[in-house]
Length: 378
Image (cartoon, rainbow, N blue to C red):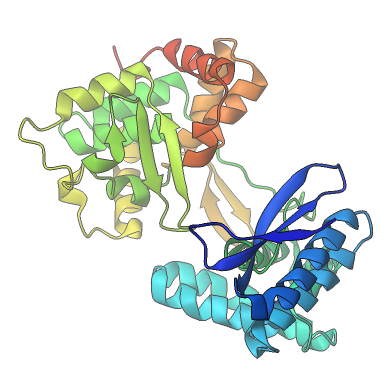
């Protein structure tokens, strides 16, 4: 039976109810905790409970939550799926790089146009179901191809995730939507071989910061532009962790630091350390495309010639800086690390996930990383 309570650190009524599995849970109603608004908050608490208990009925939870959203917002248009999506894109254009915003523009427009064409102009964001996302994916694949359909679903996933983070939705129905198969344009980066790594290291013999990029790229799998912006304040050698906020998705991620990388960072760390100083200060202000071209020159000096694959109407190199991300799993597999452990290491878990590893899980990850030899050493 749903109930309400007050807590000292919240100005709102708190709804308490039981999920379908019998476990008790509490959630803010976002309704001011006054006697005058008790009944409104209680109705929302009951709706929360019904939504949880009806999760086996497709679309019911979304309908209930949409009604809650409408009641809280007093009919505000901002919670309609189209307006919410446009507002999300508007906010992205203010907070993300121009390149990323350009990538998001077309998928967002296609999503909004599709909602209108499907008669969903008046639908609240909570009424969007998994079936809607699948139908949108199929529409994009049939109209523009598998690649654009994957990008479009990815953008919708981010739109709905912002609704979850804002408390408007309970769950993101766009999560774990299967991609459309695209065998003709399948493309995957090739990992660097041990000989490649040695050649890259030697090619960067007069470029300390590029050797640092090689170490960081191999052991974190992060994008070159994000590593170029890494500051010492994000590196905790004592805890053995590097915290990175990605420029493309704005996700905060944490990577454990293996011994070879820890030794390198300790060796290059300035004696009079300014925590806000860049790890690679000469890269400050350098654009991502410029950094990529600089790395291609190092590859050329190392005599590494990647294959060229034509995919989605353009030529792409099978080896680039991002190939370092694919190299670490190969190294871990060769030394016998379990597939699940490899996935945990290269999966770029968030800081909160890392913090919730069990002792056994963290021990397995640390043991796998500790067994790595330094592929750059001679």
